[in-house]
Image (cartoon, rainbow, N blue to C red):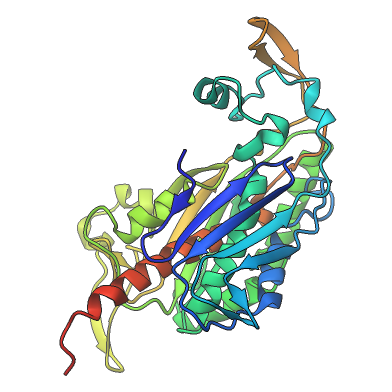
Length: 369
């Protein structure tokens, strides 16, 4: 079972949805970094459930740093964060223990772990495990922001309703990112926010769920970072994004939109301004040949509708091997887009910081002039 990621800045997550605690071990942090714990708490709060458009399982998600942190600074040793599970209702899952929930990992977990998996609340497959990812990502984001690199996401599309896209102007883009990172419901346009919120509420009223598209932008990321093939920026970020539960598609820049263009329309012409090489358009999302070109990195992630819905569904009881009906109980999200955006930000920060540190590690071999 692979629960670790990274080469220079590495993370390992652990725990289950209804276990005593979940958490993350972060290795590769330099000694002497003064972390802002309020910043971490603020990012954690954006993942928490709020209102009718979220699950009614409310967890405080208080972080407890138990190693690698002393007198307000990192020590250079592995930093371990614990997050207690304090509001579990495992009995909700006992009744349907052997009934496979459609589009969940119940069957695949059973097939892989021979029935020894923790089935309560999805166990290790649960979106609950994104909480330690956000904690680790908040640390990575702080470090990146100190270097002038900012990451932000918003709900671009949800079940027929759309928000405005990120600005192509970098100054405006940074303002949009900063605004989004201080909001719980991440939508740029106020009218679009009302429409998207109403769609999520209607799904909740129907006992159903909705998905959508999250757009992410990274401003200030320097050129020349990434690798041509297996550790390209796209490869690394896709690896992390597809590790987020419910993400089923990722595209960079125009992505699948390239299929309708001529090369003359798709290419990004270069120009020189204020001592920097830039591109007039950013169809490639800030990446050429797997390496950053200095333009904003722009990507989109497709999040499927939450698999846990209250409508009756057809399934199989894997103990009796019989066809049965399933109507789940418990507390579930009619939409996770608004909570998932901080998870998307976090995994992007983890991947980009790892690439940044790896690049710096190789540059130290060069002779200084």
